[in-house]
Image (tube, rainbow, N blue to C red; front, top):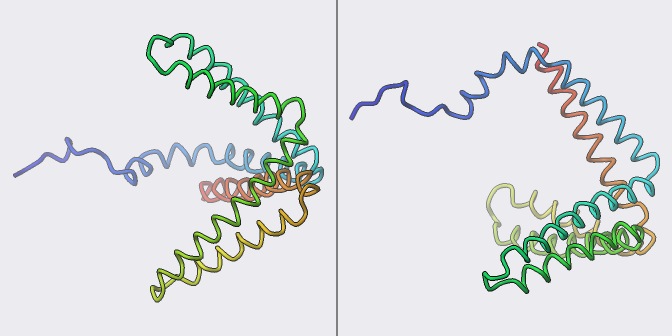
Length: 192
């Protein structure tokens, strides 16, 4: 069975290699984006409460828009038979979004508590999985990450509700800084 090389689909690596020269020509844009993200992260880290509020407002607007669209959608497909489910789901999303918009600090406290509980529960699940992987090489890293998640969750819940004022802003700031550094170094790497 023979195949022509021209009819084969390109591999992801081959597709990236084909665009590498194009990316190299735009290395400065990556550097600029990385610097912008690092600066935005530094601003977020400089005022954690404001960063938390802005994050919650953003989430609220997205949820309210989605919920409103889903309510409209429910009326468009009401003969389908699942009208009530679409409508209730849309109203729930809309209500949650409006809570985030009009009382963002209450929403931040709830989201922070949920994050803390999720870290603990996820960490426990990961810890159980790690011990089930034993004696496979690397199982200790999974256990280590599980313990860190559990400790972070405990720390967040122990400081709750005050932690609701700053945790989301801290996570946003850290993510922006690290992502910005990664994009910055990618840009410098493309320059070479």
